[in-house]
Amino acid sequence: MPTYDLIVEAYMPNLENLKKQAKLILRWHRERHYPVAAQIRGHLPRFLNMPDSEILAASFKLSDAQELVARQQGFESWQALKTGLSTTSLKVKSSPSKSSPSKSSPSKATIVSAQPQLLVTDIKRSCEFFREKLGFSVVFTYGKPPYYAQVGRDAARLNLRSVELRSVEQTLIDSPVRDREELLSASMTVATAHEIKLLFLEFQSAGVTFHQTLKKQPWGARNFVVKDPDGNLLLFAGPSN
Image (tube, rainbow, N blue to C red; front, side, top):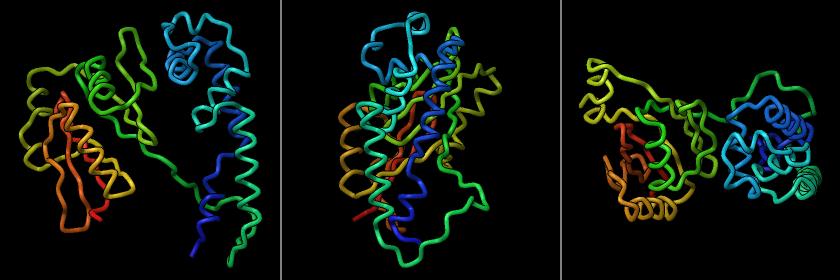
């Protein structure tokens, strides 16, 4: 069985990869790639109140891109990120393991995240719902006017795609079959029973519409289901005890 330390090592961010991310962000800014403007505004306070056009026209250096990457990883600065990664690496390397596999390239690719895509009819309205009701932040919006966006909270990411529905299609997305069969658009989890209760109470106080309130399930989970303005069902789950 793999030890916890080996799991930490496998998923620990690699500094060289983070350097490449920073260079890519810098290039996107130089190429006036609009989605990167939202990332810059969301993570660098000095750009907080600037529209996309001003952000993309502003001076933006590699050090700025590195700071953005550091903040995305939970550090205040690039130097703090390097120190943090170095400390974590030393702890992992010095920790004994009963079964330490030899360092080699993986023989199989590992999928490290999934991002559900929700179909919505109004990007602005959906972003406001996730931000004001569910405590998410807008990672980026794309298009003029926006027709695609991403929202995030902690490690969760949801992609929003605007669609224009004809009357016949409208009956499909709003079909009672979705409610009856509980066809979920996304599911998200928390680590403890206490957190799932806190999350439910947070959403309840925000006036969220629930398809299902907090409920203990026979299989050992405690969950609830939120309905967004377009009828998408979002499951939030945690352990029951």
